[in-house]
Image (cartoon, rainbow, N blue to C red; front, side):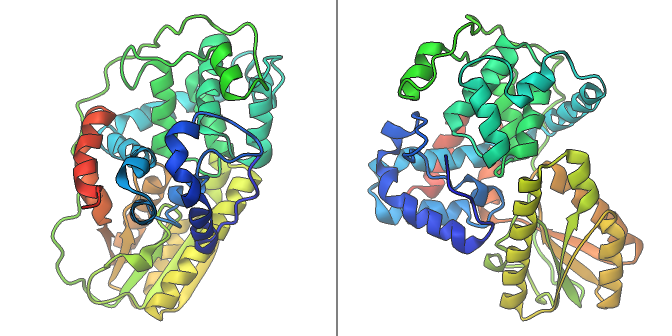
Length: 395
């Protein structure tokens, strides 16, 4: 099992340095779940909150390895961007998931509690359920096996499984998680499912697990067609902001000091942890602690880079808190890095409305990485990868 993840950028950069020597063998080793031998980078908690950015990881591996050996891992990093871009094109998939989840939470089906507790009697599955709760992390292959067994063997609603992951994964990401579960179920790519097989599990766990009684077929789930795809938000051309300017930091992007925020520069930094959101989402103590620690780390670095005072707070009404902060500082504009579709987008809308109510404009900024790549995520991954590779391949 992985060592504890520390919620800081320095820990993420150290993890990147430690992972680089083995990433040349990523294509060969990535499918194997070995408790004592790392076969993946274990960078995902840092990438998810952008304590370390996708661009940094791609640049580092491009220096460390020739492209033929680096490409498979770079492709894996690109998957995270693809999922985010895909959900930007189709935010209705997120909203439909949330609506279904709200109803299911009111009347969960038989077997749901046993599955979460790791008490199904299915070898491997029960251990992964316990590992998820205890460590906040699962190997990617184990996540796929788990989701397939949840849906096709236990016949539980995929939305509850996706929610179980988001409650406990330190790298829980609205886009990657929601759309990966939809993919296993045959919804993301209609008709294309993923079936967990005992022989595959035994092979890729070196014989640790060989579960019996798994479903022998995976009939794709169906749903009404999603609405017509949307056009992803892209930052419009900037004009100088009305000053004074503040910066709102959120846990969706914690390297704000790397981004050109425009002129004039922010003179105050605000970071707030939403107690009400954390409670409503049911985030575990570990997820909450990691998020709070990461937020403090990212906000502290941004404030130091700007030479600006920092206010870090927790509460249930972030909109009101943000408005009071902006008024106290005499701000006319607040800038923020726009989060991808998910809970932080919802928080952002709340803060945007509250700031508008006190005469302050919230100006969204977007990373160049997202601006370049999100528009290509309107179809499947491999058309996206063709476009992405042209942008990010060295030389």
